[in-house]
Length: 163
Image 1 (cartoon, rainbow, N blue to C red):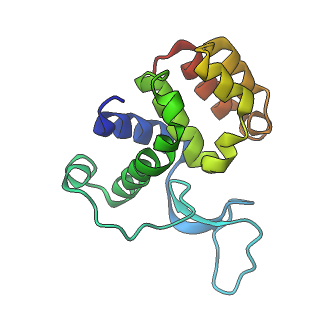
Image 2 (cartoon, rainbow, N blue to C red; image 1 turned 90 degrees about the vertical axis):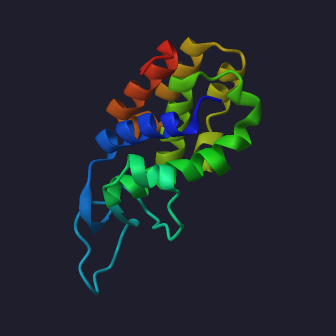
């Protein structure tokens, strides 16, 4: 696998653009700020679309590369995806270059590990290194219906293997 810090940097850059920053807690169902006592329809979310907040110690290299608190939190979350979720795809990792690893990280960030596991045909296409089919499977999904622009951008990176 490529250098994790470099992968983290590229994933953070993409996720910041895709998620956008909100310095308050909001309901991800409608995007409205959550006020005290309000009923929440979706999931309480903040910063760069983060639905959980991390209390982990920040490694020095992340602190140095991402000095702004929100960026640091996002980088730490991406590092957790690399260390825990991405490594569960061991069979796939040898087939993915740097850019395609970043796509998988971004998908796990948005959909969760179990959500990405639902992309059976995409994962099979990755194992076969059939990048056109992997990209087509990303487009032929509920994910694409919900976030078309984002899914198309990620599919194009998967297809070309370049950021």
